[in-house]
Length: 307
Image (cartoon, rainbow, N blue to C red; front, side, top):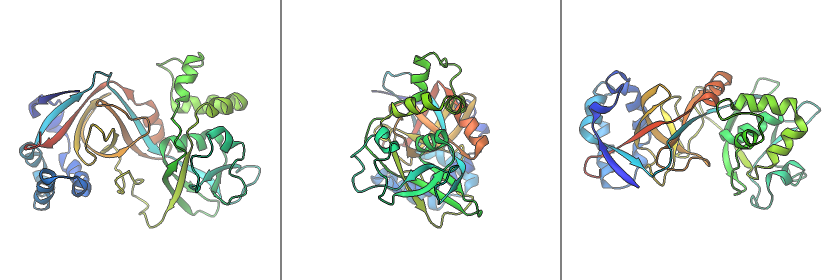
């Protein structure tokens, strides 16, 4: 692991970013960061107005580039919005499960084959197997019921099995190339090839369970791992073994240059230069997130005394 200090003047786009917006997002979770240095930052934030965000960041923090020798990779995630039903029928037949008492007992193939049936764990039923699979990848979802009610679902846990990328599998099979594979493309292929799609999905042994969130404002994003709603294009998922959860990070990847906050983690997010950008809710956010796959760099803002 190597750490290199970077100057604010070296960040292309720093002066033109809306740092007041990033400051408001950072303010929501800074109190969760451990240690006296972060504690003093949290105390200082209370007296800062968003208009003073640039001076605050530049005087309170130093920039560090953390590298581990792995190639940088920045991707996107989003909150799906899908039709669903509380009752299984010929249309809605793909269950979303609550966390069982023995979550590690079965792999994905066993669960999809019915290993959890009869235990009352079905929260809701979806109409599309591919969408049900990818909602597990995203870790959250808004389910619109026939009567118009919206269920906000969030990650509750997993079966503890390692995640295996279906995208990499389909590239290896020659269905896609590295440059053409996208989440939407994979979904379309699965719908056109349901038996092969089921077989490929079952190669990923990981299975995610959900819980219903009550009282979350309709305009708020899903909860990140810090227990706070994430914000579109301001929140990122990182590897907390490298980047402190709650820390500001500067991302420069795929034409996206802006200050974000590390407010989430992901099962596939591992490494110093690896992050997942939250793009928002719904189909358009999903298209943007699915197409976001870029090299680049991420610079972490750490308290001056700690850096």
